[in-house]
Length: 113
Length: 117
Image (tube, rainbow over all chains, first blue to last red; front, side, top):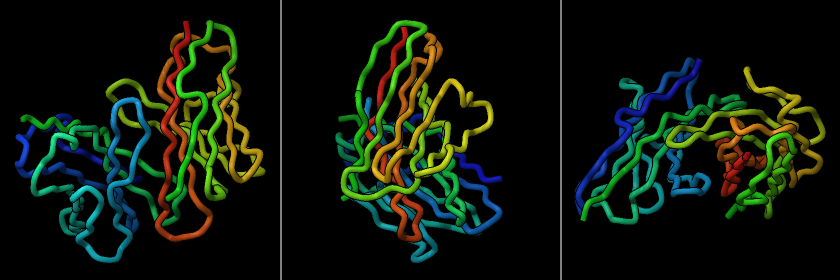
């Protein structure tokens, strides 16, 4: 069975600081991995995805994530946080059959001025 | 890009009544749509997978007679909460998946906030 673990339900950074949101997955088959962002009372917006091509994936808004098979990790980073990055972030995994996507519990990012 | 809409965005209904939520893919055809439920400060819980022209597949623990899903066309899926109760109050989000492509990407609607009084 697949699962996703996001370490840290809350992360707080200063504006301009590095953002690091952690995600570890469990999958018996090569996974497809996603990061989504959710602003209050809105749906989810895709930040980036890993689909077995390049292990370093660049997404929108300056975010990127690196797939590390040996560590079963897919951590999300951004070199310099902006106030507008404050939101809830979800890591998700889909099996290659694509039948179901499992979401992590989410990490709320706070950005301090 | 791919756009998914939901209607209504907010709805308040009385206990015992039924509420229908629509999910539309506006610029692509979606053979598969998903319905999620999200409780405050929690993650998304998949309720059911809806395939056009066939019966929805419900996740374990989701009452199919209470949460009726109809995927009547390639651009529309509906979720009807029947005989709603206050515990059904939640944020319901749909997503749609285009039929082509290998990335299994989903496009999410903006969500519907249901409050049952």
